[in-house]
Length: 210
Image 1 (cartoon, rainbow, N blue to C red):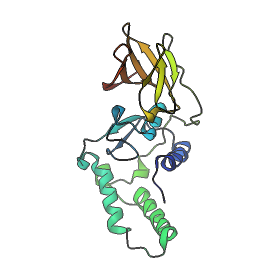
Image 2: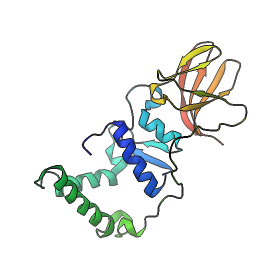
Image 3: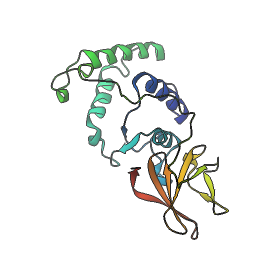
Image 4: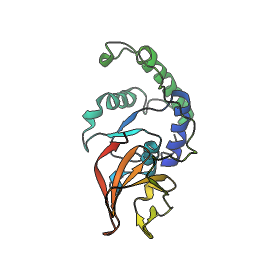
């Protein structure tokens, strides 16, 4: 890829989801486009979109690449075997990488897989991807709000800022107390909104809707 912006990575992800289905979770580091250093739960527009599709964000601890060891090993192999060793620009390097991926997935034995190749054990996800032009149907008793381009929702006749990462998405608002609400993004609880104090706090842990 010549660009790694959230939108370009999103388009590539869509193509992969159509081919292989939706994962239950994605493990990533804490960098772009998966996470932001500030904001609600460190969400980016990209990771918020993943959650809207029902994908759990599984981030490693900051500065702990060993927690994603097999992935880091793969990048190390690419660096040693491909990076900077193929003349001819982007197209030539892409062709070399395509051959490397084929060998990595179908020929090369992996110690972590009992000396099998990934293709020997891989199965596509049973969760089909049918596009993201939809709005979540939240349970009875929830109010539904579409997040504005400024990252706000309107509740109790006031605008409350959540996160610009959520803009354009539909959240569910579940009343807990007289002035306290849980904010849901798809099937995940992401924040607690206190309208009297006009405060929004991220949930201690992302909860799945039961």
